[in-house]
Length: 244
Image (tube, rainbow, N blue to C red; front, side):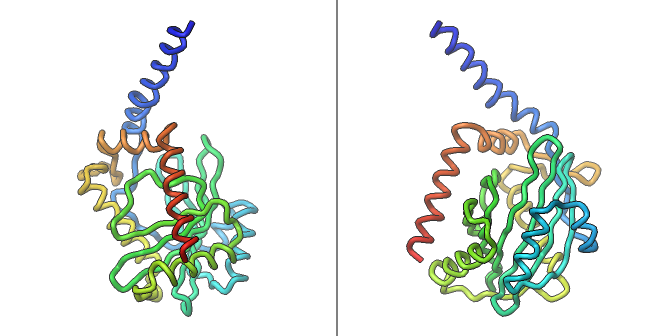
């Protein structure tokens, strides 16, 4: 009985860790280069749900003005977002909805500050950690338990004042905010290409994962690696917040 159980478990692990990455390798694609074209705010509101609408109102109520909206698609996944900013605080909030017919829709808030050395801090409440390796130019803190915009802003300001007090914040170039975000995304993409996670060549305007990238990307989303990563990253975020 035990031998049979171990056999079944072994087959399951082979499927998860050996075969699932090959499926991801064959299907996962992203744009050759990110280009974020503005779309009307009303169009995004038509494509998003009640949670997204409520958070947009919270963001504006907390002193962040609407700047622009955009969307992009990768396979069956569509991402809609709105960008808000507070020039006095030099903080920007991206409200994002990620939709895919095969998984529950995710809505999260991401607060960003750009510094004059072109480094970035991101504080967000997404439910999952990103699977790609972090950019050396970005420090990220994830607090999925904080859903109120005002509390997430307060936590962001507390961390910046303590953890990044030596840096000088700058605003995004006015009228070129989406272009700035696209530039940062493309520079992160270049880092992934250099590390061997993404293919250098593209086909039909789309870029795929390397075999190495597909395996590492998938493994980071599987048990128990996913839970270990989340626990470690949560501990780091809580430690920095406690010391702030």
